[in-house]
Image 1 (tube, rainbow, N blue to C red):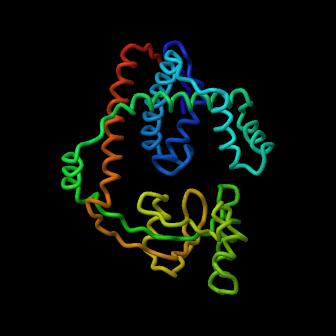
Image 2 (image 1 turned 30 degrees about the horizontal axis):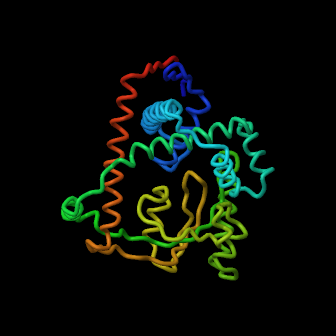
Image 3 (image 1 turned 90 degrees about the vertical axis):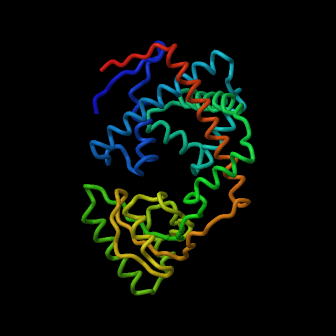
Length: 293
């Protein structure tokens, strides 16, 4: 990937920030890391990353101009929340160090994120509540969206595979598959022992999920299984899986009253997003944005 510098009103976006954005949107759009993307997918992700980086920086610059900035207490609270996902504060800071991020830089990143969120909320909160007529019209016009899609509940065992250990990983998952078939230990017990997914702590249980929640290879197999059935070995970009479906909820039609709160939220968010987009476009028109390869 060719390195380029984006400058927004004289502020340069680092290549580090650009690559981080690429990784985030690659996972969001395709459930893949950047190095797993096809050339076409890479181009799509790159376009989105550039567009959103510019929008984020413009929002942040405007937030600073208007004094929409979180205090130290809010920054520390958000940092504590993130830190809770790590075994200890020491491991959290060690992880930052491995990523090349010192404490001051991390606090600046958190402050920027919070400022952007606060400024975004300031703009979108002016969106009006939809009328009863608008809500009912949306319900009537979108019958295909008024269903709760089929969901499955599944557990899995993941053996991570890389180019360096692929044969070893194949051998290991095949051995685990034989243990599942033997039935001496439960699927959950084997997941706790062999899986590298965080879900191993819950016996591999991923809970209920619907279409689009998992990578396509995993999803296709999971939705083809009946409760109680276990898959053959499934390969995804993350490695090799064994999947066991434990429950299934078929698609159901939802009544107007059931979905009305969600429709209100959706319509208001839609209006808010339109307001934000129009506001950012005005900022873009006034901004000086350059690209240097």
